[in-house]
Amino acid sequence: MASSCEKPSTHPASPLSELPFINRELSWLEFNKRVLEEAQDESVPLLERVKFLSIFSSNLDEFFMVRVAGVKRQISEGNFRVGPDGLMPTQALAAISARVHELVDEQHRCFLDTIHPQLAEAGIHFVTPSDLDGEQERFTRFSPRWPLTPVTRFRTSPIDPCTWSPGCGRWASRICR
Image (cartoon, rainbow, N blue to C red):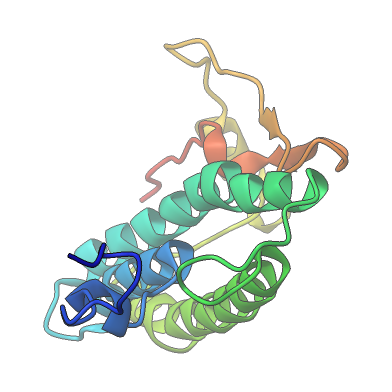
């Protein structure tokens, strides 16, 4: 009786070995793309579309703090092995960067070309303190009813300096009529 080590297996290869694997970070970015598509959908109410843009941005903040930081950590630790998706961490990081730039450009176009003008048509305007007259400026001053937290600092890798992330802090707005 011959041992199984002496003759090749007649069993077919595992079905998983035939399937291409998708990079999990790139897959996650495609999920977040679907959130952005909700903001681009003209059948969705305007303020809901603004909310979807906010969710898209918040998701990206967390993505960089967790997922991109993990890829950068692999690189800083000298891990250059090809993963199941066929990419080394350096290649994955380059692909992530390219895709994020595309998505953020799309987000900006969505806001600037469509949502911002529609908000203005609906009577919702973005103003800076220099746009206000004296009475409006006094009206908008307030004492917060909750403690404002400082802007959160985070790192995407042990070798990078801390980055300021205003998206992770609190923002205040006031309705003026």
